Image 1: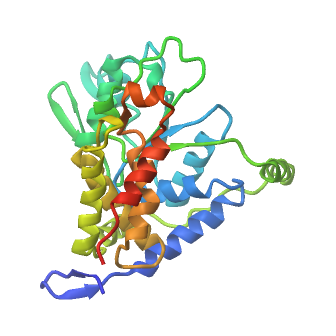
Image 2: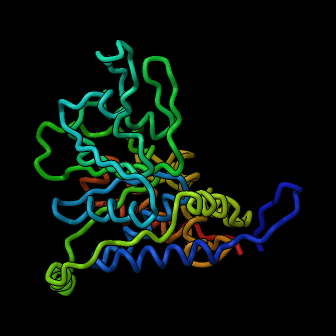
Length: 324
């Protein structure tokens, strides 16, 4: 059984049930208003516990903003939504010093990045300079405003969306910046049955979502996830998956060590959400695609031949079998 240590160095059991129960209560609460989207809800919670950030792609109207805002409410955390546009400046995200004419002094007006859950709509609409300001805050978890450093409050997670339609005038993120996101998720349209359920939910005018946990409990669960046990054979399995991308004939850009770290962190969170204090290879396999799909680049020759990322990742997972 995985354990953590108290102040005297004595081992204490992990309260895995706390994580699993909270995950279920968040899902149940969101399902009062949200139809389906189970995978996105789990990804939101698992990335929060693994201290990672999420990139979401999908057409307009798929409830990305609604889910994120309601998710933050169930956590009892602060939420901020930032709409990215070409004229947005880095200071709009990080903040700036403002002169107060009444006191004749400067004060700090903090930007939209100062929240526990930050949603960035249409990340690729902003200029590279503004994108960099966001990504720096994501990586460093602090903001520097005119020489003064301000740490971002924990927990901290960014969910960014990218527009996939009407891409004229956008500034696509280079691969080195995409790599900073733990996972990339693509949302599809609801099924026929789900579309009908959405209409019924709107007819009922469901009551407000309730808070099911709080910031201190979340910080406690983050510590629990950090102590979920990972066997050496599972670590070797993660290594083999990532190294296989570096030797694959269809790839010109393989996975970086950030991919290994993301596979480790998110597999730990997935195990805890399922009530286990240890990671199994199936945890790694289940999250591999969303961790790898934005980090790999297919060669032009293979792309012309019709090779897809789904096929490449599936082949890698077939070859990199866990040790027994």
